[in-house]
Amino acid sequence: SQQGEEDPQALSIQEGENATMNCSYKTSINNLQWYRQNSGRGLVHLILIRSNEREKHSGRLRVTLDTSKKSSSLLITASRAADTASYFCATDRNNDMRFGAGTRLTVKP
Amino acid sequence: SQTIHQWPATLVQPVGSPLSLECTVEGTSNPNLYWYRQAAGRGLQLLFYSVGIGQISSEVPQNLSASRPQDRQFILSSKKLLLSDSGFYLCAWSAGLAGVGTQYFGPGTRLLVL
Image (cartoon, rainbow over all chains, first blue to last red; front, side, top):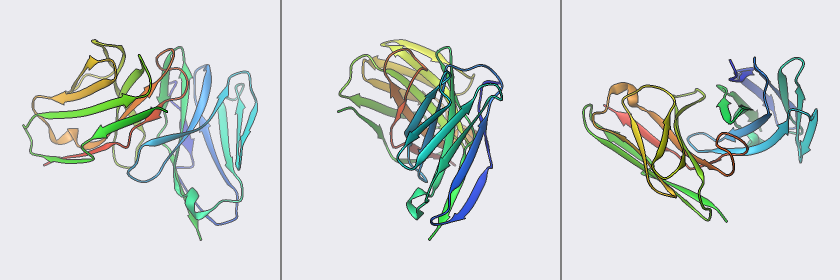
């Protein structure tokens, strides 16, 4: 299916460590986006990477996209306790955007 | 700047009662509007989207309906709630082609059907 699947489902790290989350999908896409959701809140857009791009950076965030493997990764460097949240990838194909189930990240102070 | 509002924030309703959740967007014209449902600890399920007034597309058959009476107003309704309608409901908007590009989410409504 087009819907992305995040891996791992949950990740727990210490403050200062890097966090890597992965997203895999099964069909071709136009772009892929990562969103963050604090507990009980709406989603906040983090970064969009187009199908012809391989890597993008935004502050402490680094996103890669490998269309041959149909996968993307989100790296958060030097994590902080405030990064604790759920992170979702969303795949965009022909005016149709679908969200995965998310990775729950816990950063321990 | 654009803002999106949802209310109420929390709602507890008995089974069989009606539902009306409202979402409004400010600061933009002719937005694409979306209703999602999120089960506890799960991803988002797209319920409805709208590209214009009176234009509603339904993604999954269900006990819910949506309406867009004004350009920046999107309403999610039910005539009779089921227990399975419990969840976290999120409204979102985007510009340009529907389903393409960044979506901006409201704060959500947590619905508990008892």
